Length: 152
Picture 1 (cartoon, rainbow, N blue to C red):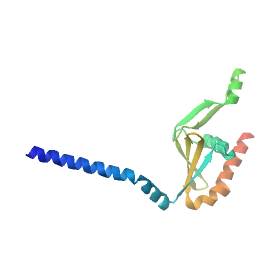
Picture 2: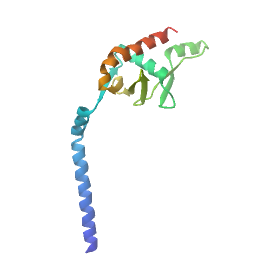
Picture 3: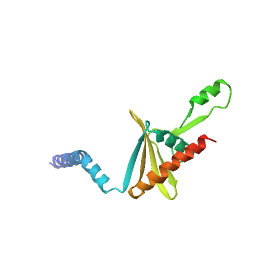
Picture 4: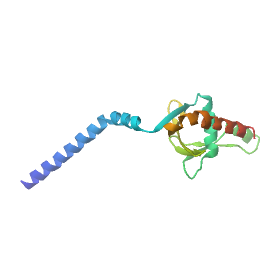
C-alpha cells in the first residue's frame, strides 16, 4: 500500500510540474510584454540595407577585444585581389553571429548584438534616457570615426 501511495505522490508531483511548465510557456508572451513595459532599455535595429550598417561593422571590428567576445576572421575582397599579386592581404574581423559586445563611449554604455537571419542586422541596446544622445552624438561619432579610418 505504501508503494501505491508513493507512486501516486510522484505522479501528482509530475502532473503539477507539467501544468506549471505549460502555464509558463503559454504566458511567455505576457511575461515578455511586461518586461518590455517596465524595462529602462531601448533596442534599435540597424539592418544591412542601411548605410550606417557598414560603419557600425567597421567601428565594432576596430574597437572590440578578442578577449571579451567571439570574433570571425576572413579575407576581404581587396585582400583576395592583393593575394594574387603576392602582397599582404587585409583581414576582416567581425562579430560572430549572435555575439554581444559592449562599447563604452563618453561615459555611456552600449550593447551591440550582430544578428543574421534573412537580413543581417545589428541590435543596439541602451538606456531609454540615452536615446537622444545615441541619435545626436553616438551614431554620428561612429560615422565620423569610420570616415576618418577609411582615409588613413
